Length: 365
Image (cartoon, rainbow, N blue to C red; front, top):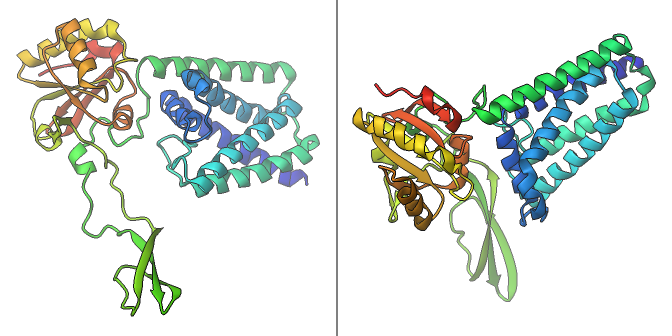
């Protein structure tokens, strides 16, 4: 039992630290995922949505600290109970998402590793078993250092997590796992290889044959049946290839300008996914830097999921020298974790990407 507990202790501790750190690198992204869970279509807890970011920061820091505390053997009873309660909550959420197909990615490892809902649930079940082993054999979880040393290690871990969270919140994630990272080409990210696997569907055809209902399952062609067609049900049995970027559009008056904009040799995108939540205090600086970009031959466009009345008001209030296009809110949140944020592109390749706190770092050659 002692060796099983030791192995479980290392696996759980390391996994919680890695999982927590990946989310700590992008707490805004994890808060978006929590908002999905809190929405009316999932858990129906909308009153938590305004606090999603605060909950996100607390959860990811606590997750890292629990991993550290488990490995060093600090406050074992509290640590094991906390791990158990946390994994029970995670297991419920991932099962709910998988069974009802509500949230297609749990966000367990941020954008670094995408898991299907059932993969996420399976991972949590394995962790639950390991943590139950720790709970049962917690007397074998011995400290690796003295009491003061354990307190210092835990305090240092807490301070480092808090400092790191503060940095990425006021700038951008240090490690960008998304398909819109600096150096990525958006157009290439939308390409589907010729040999990419295709989606496979089962079609359950219902017919009335001589007064009796018959169901014939095929994977494509309409079956040859001497009877009256009633209905057909479609089930996806194998997902096809989905390119890293599959929802990028830049629309205005119903027309998509994405293809032409991605051919611009000098392009600046000002991204504000929701103008009701954007930081309007920085638009004077936005006007200044976009004016410099225009003088240097850049085309500047705004991108938002807000309606035309809101974008027109923003342009008028701040006398901006560019117009806004419509892009899906989820896409804009994925592109940059800042509202507003600014990208500089060269024929679809992202050369620069900054938080509104770092506008002075932009360079326009």
